Length: 441
Ligand code: GLY
Ligand code: MN
Ligand code: MN
Image (cartoon, rainbow, N blue to C red; front, side, top):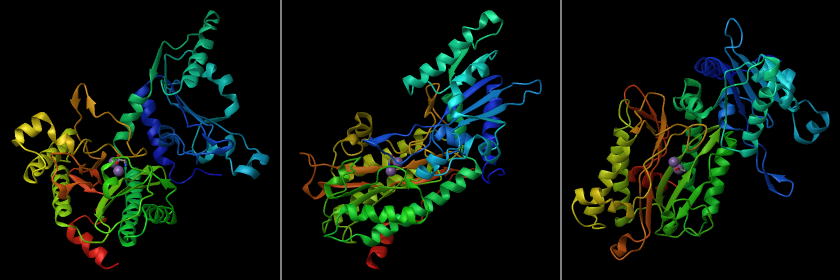
């Protein structure tokens, strides 16, 4: 077997990590398989950090990078993975095994997963620092510390144990935050599948149908284009359900006159897309629905204008909030002055979440939003969602016409030199475009 195509980016990322470490050992395990009930498992999903650095998708695997190892300071890249096993492969499918994984995934050395506890203390010997995933799983933390302790127990033989034990995520989060060209290519393809799914949902919606039938349309569209999974549980929320932010029951009847809020995106080759569209089940917005919808759309446009290099993470959110707050006053959902609404945050009655999050291998992707107490500056290659909303639950101050209207509009944006590229623009979102598409059903 030879080096798999698409492995080059993973090699580059490992080289960058090794360079940042200087001298020391990085240990990155993949995710465990998880039981759903009795002996049935959840579909397996590898760990995002591990995948970013390896491209390897089998469970029971650990990446180890020994940085600054030799005289030439060339890092050693090691993979521990499952051995070939004819019996298990008949039942569960192909395993690379250490020998093939070495050439296919570009490692210097590979070992059987079962060798981990034996080999790790040797790898940590005379190393100044260990960079590991700490704090996520007590058993894993204990295992890493166990290896360090084993080296400590040998110090009388003249070897040194690592002095620094650091959490590796600070380094890995920064590596993941700015996407490279290969990642952006995958994210564009994921976004294309998801926009197609939202268009299909608009075409399939009918009063008398159900939310789960629309969910099925989405899932079919994701899978038939090769997406492995939804990136998160799809939200298909009609009528008042749209005011439940994480509504996932998806079991209600679609009713004439209701809006349908769909927050759904596929995961393709590890990368998430995350889109929300809100549209009328019957294809035509009512007056109050249109008023709220246009307000959220204007807030989103204002936020997207602020997605550009040099602006801080919070600027798109602030821009969206300002537009929403003024709109809530104009629609008589709130009273007072704009300054008061912003100062007292009374808009939070109808807009209680933030305007976006990083997007990548995880739907809520890795990366800090603040650095040293300051909102982070946007840089080309960062990918974020822009997703303002307005959720109007019945309350004494709410005019009856607006009760139970819930709207969110969400797109995925890549920061570019000039501003941003919207990956999900192909899913219609102007009132005219949505109504035209639905009229052609
Ligand atoms: N779909 C999850 C989110 O929008 O954050
Ligand atoms: Mn989102
Ligand atoms: Mn979403």
